[in-house]
Amino acid sequence: MKIFGFSSAGAALADAMSQSKAVIDEGGDQAKEEIEKLKKAYEELDARSKLILRLLLFFSGIDILTSIL
Image 1 (cartoon, one colour):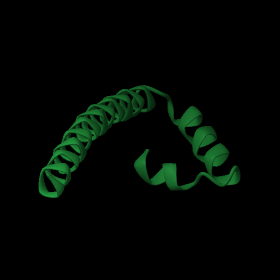
Image 2 (cartoon, rainbow, N blue to C red):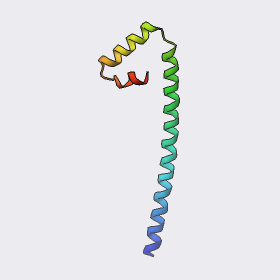
Image 3 (cartoon, one colour):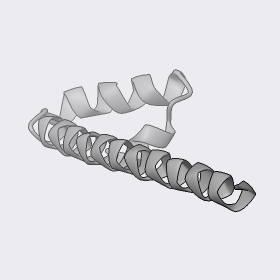
Image 4 (cartoon, rainbow, N blue to C red):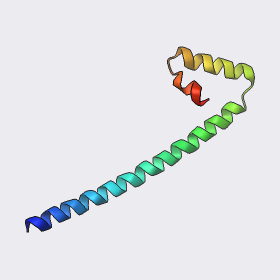
């Protein structure tokens, strides 16, 4: 009976892990799509707006985003 108990616990854990992976993968895909939308919107800005946005991100401490943009 002990072996069966461990097997069912392992099966439940594997199922939970596969469901979590599916949720994480879906969230990652949504994040990638959102980043692409932001890149496209950023490319449509004029030079002055781009400079203002870069300065705002730099001085707010979120300058890691400037490497993406």
